[in-house]
Image 1 (tube, rainbow, N blue to C red):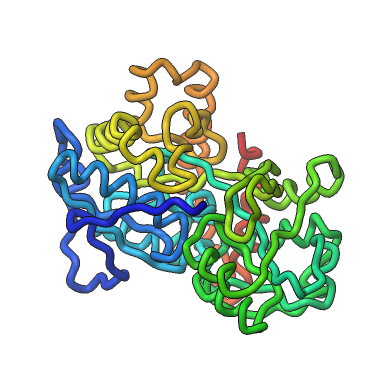
Image 2 (cartoon, rainbow, N blue to C red):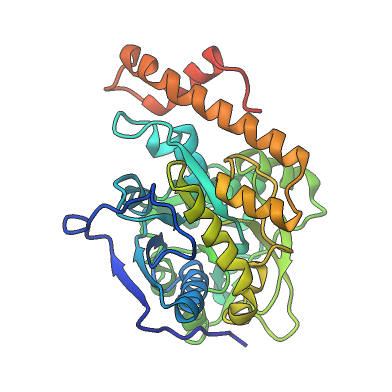
Length: 377
């Protein structure tokens, strides 16, 4: 059965209307969880938002702090308030990686590589829902079907790329349909698209499964070549089982894409603000653990503590060290990622000075990195 979370006045939700927002003092040192926080996230109908709101609501009630959650369907929309210092951090999809490396839509003169840090990195299962009447059983069956291209969301589009790679398909084998991330459930119901990719516990997916028969199309971890093709496109993804999702029967198990959707900040967030946020998320975990299906993955036993593509914030590292979960291997990896990020940001102006800005900057930037920088550590 779906788990719900309770909302409270302490947690405010709004769309990203930035013109009237005040800049926050991200350098301010604190001695407890900050009295006011502004976080960004996916839309209110998603499980990504539900998890974040549950944690924020619990901490707010316990500390009398206020957390404003700003929602957006787009990667740029979730990151812009952080960049403008109108939000302290955001729960981001793979845009936290794309922005760090200046890839995808961040390969443009307005952005380029961003100096980001992970504050807390819970994982969550995502998968691909179809209608029971569609006849689609595996990714291979998507040939000729209507597959979403998610507007301004490189993270999710990367997962669709990976899905097609698993099935031995390309975008030339399917019919791309442009929709926003939150439009997918209704578009699937109306027949505008034939498949939808979301975190499997989203409220909108439960609503959809209550109105029409749906099912999850499967990945098989034993298909090692197909999984390797998927991970070549989306290297942070693991194929693992999930249960209790929208449309599943009691005890049913399907396989989906499991990866981190981390709470992320810029590096200039003060060490104490990151530390107190990480500390609060762990110390208040028992009170929000059962708020949603996936908040049980928000404690130190389950969150990612080894940096993979983006380094952790120094405040989080201090907390990890106090809790005995930060290793020499993690420290070495973190330092290597920080140094690589510094190289990326240092070479970006030189790249732009010689780039053809009327052409494909993404391809030019990729070629520049291959030529001028050592491989990613």
